[in-house]
Image: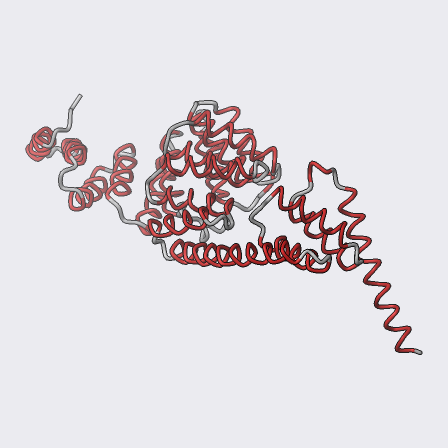
Amino acid sequence: MKLANIFKSGKEKSEIKNKSIIEEINLKEKTKLNDEDYLKRGKAKVDLKDYNGALSDFNIALNINPENAFVHFERYKVKDKLGDKTGANQDLQIASTLMDKLDAGINAYNTAVDKDNANDFKSAIEYYCKAIKLNYNVFESYYNCGICRYYNGDYNGALLDYNKGIELDSTNSEIYSQRGFVKYKKLNDFSGAIEDYNIAIRLSPNNASYYRDRGESKSKLNKFEEALQDFDKAIELNLNNAEFYFNRSICKFNMKNYTDAIYDLDTSLKLDISKSSWLTAANIYSFRGGFKCLIEDFKGAIADFTMEIKLNPSAKAYFDRADAKMNLNLYSDAINDLNKVIGLEPEKGEAYYMRGCARKELGLDELYFEDKIKAIKLGYEIE
């Protein structure tokens, strides 16, 4: 008796669950139902032994997506239950063919992902295209293929893939962001990039990176006030992103607000930049040193360029420090830096000319003329 009650209770629970599934899908607007919704409702009706109702749902599902192998397989079982052996066998054969196609699509997609992860973008594109032809993960394949084409240097091809992806799903914010990035970064279509970021932000208003990227695009159009608002919003959403403060500092520099630009770089240096793909501490010191020169804080600039040199001893860093030292009449120290520049870039005419000027200030006229002549020979135009 107890076992019968347990069995009955389990059966009742299953019935309640299936009815709940049917009611849930019924509440959806018909225009919003897809093949998977009808498949789910049809399977619930099968469990309730409503085979005709299930058949109707499977028919509708296949009208929406005739290549859904799982629907064909479920319809095969229902037709078999209803005695339609011919129709059942047809669905079983179609399901089998589609399953083979699905397997091929899965293999193509997985191979594409493996090639993608190995940075073999050319091969990844080939296999993503195969997956698309086999109708497997089509949106994801177009999206990923667009990224691979970008890294492979085919920027217009990337746009075409993103366009196809958007045709399939216009509610995915990331694909608009990626398309905007290509337009901004490689095609100089800054207005088009802004339009894409507008849509991405409308779909995902709390994504800080979208505001930053839109701000970068606006900066390219010299819309610095609008860009600043976007950078402010990005920082409001993510207070600990060093890149955002760096981006805002460049915007403030373009607005000739050098002091505030320096403050943003101060903050950027305090934050973790280890995960950034492009921003380094050396970059930040370089820009901050340059901004300090603009407000005639040459000692501060020298300190920043010195930090930059410790992290990245480039010719540019030595040259910038030499320039700051020249402004403080530290001619011998400037010459030492310029010697480093010339050692790293012996064809840099401007370094010879600046060294000549420092030598002239020290009364070394003969060496001044030697450097001046060398600069002219290297094509440096002396005003």
